Image (cartoon, rainbow, N blue to C red; front, side, top):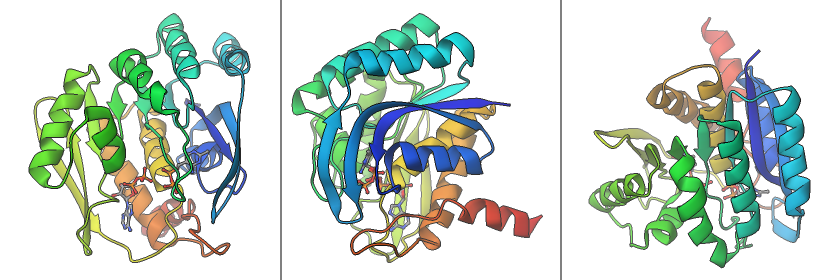
Length: 268
Ligand SMILES: Nc1ncnc2c1ncn2[C@@H]1O[C@H](COP(=O)(O)OP(=O)(O)O)[C@@H](O)[C@H]1O
Ligand SMILES: Cc1ncc(COP(=O)(O)OP(=O)(O)O)c(N)n1
């Protein structure tokens, strides 16, 4: 059984964070494990409260997993502060883990901050150089790379600058693109660009799309897929999950983690 770890925050509403990651791991048939960095009180309307855990609590969870079960691939989501980023980076080096997916979560849909501003520098200096792939949305890429992204050319330039930070691959996601009909995720491995396009689904229920997308990449890497192939599967997974989104609550509802597998079994 292949094993995937998520180091991220808990979303009590179940649409994003640890909960979205574990649902995705399950659907893609890898064994899911978690190290929780923060507990959020959250629902479809937004984040009502954030309770970060201590560095010690985060490290102890990672150690318990590393010492006994092992990890084939891991992703990070909400890391909240520079001390947690430093500690997670140290654990990655100590365990010589290579299949590292960074979802540089910064701000939730309702505007709540999930990463302290001063932690961006630790993310750039400590964690990004250790990672196999990073999956920023456009606002996150703009903060990390410190440039405006308005066009495909800008996305390409930002992708090149990510590689200069030491990460091996990057996907700049297109959920925040202005095109009303299409989303385009730009993949770059330092050599070639690939443009992953899909029909934009007209829905408010997109809570947790970034978490689910990066968790799907992690699951596929854990199974031994090549990076680009993992990204292509993740794009199909998130497209199906958004198309069959679940209208729960009064705000941004979650995506449907069952949709991809349900469709695959119908195709067989
Ligand atoms: N309305 C939509 N229709 C189709 N795909 C979408 C839509 N919104 C987001 N996506 C896809 O979901 C994934 C997450 O993207 P994005 O929303 O940019 O991330 P985040 O949740 O981190 O802000 C990407 O693959 C993106 O193309
Ligand atoms: C605990 C937690 N982690 C991450 C997020 C952000 O998730 P994301 O997939 O970027 O989705 P939205 O916040 O845009 O819906 C979160 N909200 N909570």
